[in-house]
Structures are given as C-alpha cells and as structure tokens.
Image (cartoon, rainbow over all chains, first blue to last red; front, side, top):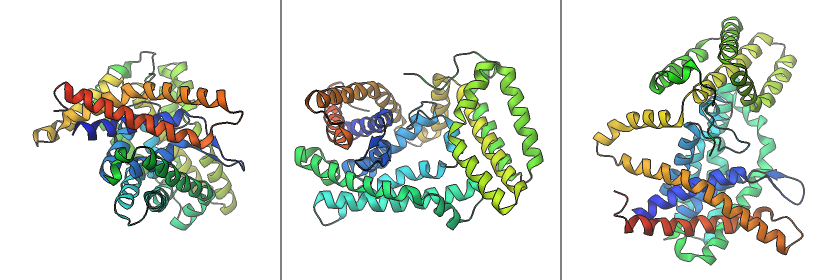
Length: 180
Length: 199
C-alpha cells in the first residue's frame, strides 16, 4: 500500500518536474516537451492503474492552481482551453500504455514502445481531437488535420519511452512495477 | 512553490471557493449555449471591465495567461477569413477567451488552502462511502513536497553531465531522473511504513 502511494506521488512530481526541463532538442531540430514523455513513462514504468492515478494526481495539482504544465501553465483555465481534450486523455493514455506493457508477450522495451504508441498517440488523440473539434467548432477530420504536425514528434517520444523503460528494466528490474 | 493565486487581495478572494467553482461551472455551460457573437462580446467586455476593476496587476496577469490561446485565435482568423463565415469565427474566438479567462479568474482569486478545503468537502461523500480520501490528501502533500526535491536532483544530474561532456544531455537525462523518482519512492514507502503506514 505505502509503496503504491509513494510511487504514485513521486511520479506525479516527476511529470511536474519534467515540465520545468527546457524542451529537449533532438539532433535534427525537432523540439519535444519532456512532460508528455513523462505521461507515457508513468504507464510503462508503474503499470496501468498506478500510472493512471499518478497522472490524475498531477492533473489535480494543476487544477487547484499550480503552474505545473510545461510553459508554466496551470489553474482551471487550461481545462477550458482548446487542448483540454488532451489533458482529459492523459490518464487514459497512461492506463493504456501501462496495460500493454503489463500484458504484451514481448521484451519489456518493445512492449513499452507499443504501449506508448497505443496509449500516448492513439488513445490520446482519440480524446484530444474531439476536444479540439468541440472547442473550435470544427469537424473531426478538420481537427485531426490541425494536429498532424505533432505526429512526428510524438512518434519519437514513443521510441524514447521504449528506450527509457528498457534501460530502467535493466538497471532496476525489481523497481519496474508494470512487470512485477 | 508559487501558485497562480494573485498576491493582490481582491474582494473575490473572500468569496467561498465552493461558490466560485459552482458559478464557474454554470457560466461555462452558459457560454457554450450561446451561438451568436453579440452576447458573447458583451460578456467579454463585462469580464474585461471586472478585471480592470480588480486592479491593473490582475488584468495584466489575466492577459498573460491567455497567451497560449494565440495560435488558436490565429488559426481561427485564417480559417474563417478563408471561408468567409466571420460571425461564427468571432463566436468561437470570444467563447474561448471568455471561458478561459473566467476559469483563470477563479484560480487567481482562490488561495491554495481554500481550494484544498473545497476539495475536501467535494470528496467528503466518497469518504463516507468508505473510500480512503485520507490517502489522497497524503499523496497530494507528498507530490507537492517532492517537486522541489526532484527538481534539485535533475539540476545535479545536468551539472554532472555537463562536467563530463561538451554535448547537451538531451533525452538521456530522463533515465537517471526516472531512477531518482523510483528510488525516492522506495525510501518514502519505507518511511511511511515505519511511521505507522498510509492509513
């Protein structure tokens, strides 16, 4: 019990801290925010339930008025912004990423990569695109078109989530709660 | 750590947090019901006047907090400029601005302690239903406490990296950062257990 609680709290803090880290520049000039990678890692490292709870805890901290989203955003206003759908999708994305990492019958790094893709891209977009469509009063295909620019960056995050989870599994096999 | 609550005391600070949250919900629902630009423009003007009445610093902060909307407003201007449906574009833009400004106003005028008290009351029915809401409070406190701790740890990791390599750490910093969170979580779990558990 204590172990679940402390991991959930610490990973909520980790997502917040990754929001302060300046954007990571990849060699060919694509900037990515570490924060959304943190969402994927919550699922792939902590597993479905704990990962989703960690993300929910993080969103609660944002909602009660802490400027923890990357770029120093926070408060209730971000839940009324055009990207609110993505925020609502965050915990579900972590859940799906964790579920796939737990269940997929393959090496943990590959499972984490697959989970991050199904959770952090497919599931997240399934929430983000309707949210965008609703807030901007556009059709679903139109809203989907607006965010295609982010797809390459998100695919890189998927690969990184797999790599980081793989490294963690080698360094602390016992600490990877998604596979224990 | 800094919150988004305005340090400048306004009359709105003294309103109960629960009331402000309920009003915000009702107002947001109303904003999404309005489908013509005129009433929304009236609300936006009233909201701007209210901000100025509350003080310059509140108004300036509110304006700064709306900055993430700019790309979307530019996109809407382009889109509706091309389709020629300007009234609809104005409706959507005004709705975005007013909904977000109103929510930010509640955040700006409600202290963290008041917000936490409101959260306690909201979760009280869950506690009566037997759900462990005390753990939620504990988890919130732990996460808050460990944000500066992990932030310092990442600074140390970056410093260690730059001392050894001329290149920037990039994504590799994520691995020791996640390791730090995992190890710290194990320590905290042990400490909690030693102090009688998480309840």
